[in-house]
Image (cartoon, rainbow, N blue to C red; front, side):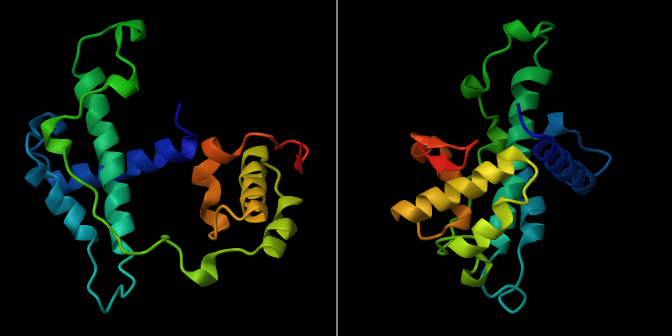
Length: 176
């Protein structure tokens, strides 16, 4: 299940998309990618506004949230399955034709600039004050990866959780 923050962000993006579609178009009326792309293209900024082309990350984020919602709508809400046990798992969901849009590629290694990445000392400073175990675990994982040299971008290493967490005790914040 998605976190509260993820659900909220998806809802906000879907509402913005619905406003862009207008009152005469419903999500069930979406059949082609060219009905979604104009909304995504409103996130594009000029070279002078965004020389690092960060808008690509925003464009892709909106695409991911809209695609997830449309996949849910297409596979669950539009099918008359009254019991959740009859629904296919998310991994088996079909992507509707309108949402078959490829993400834009960026030349940047990371969505963050060098000055936005935290070094080891900065991570140690914040870990002890983090009240939420999940966030502390993410910080700890970054430290773990930095110690073993598997990732130069220490702060953005949390996506590697499933690949590097083995043998690391997140609760005690020590290697085992």
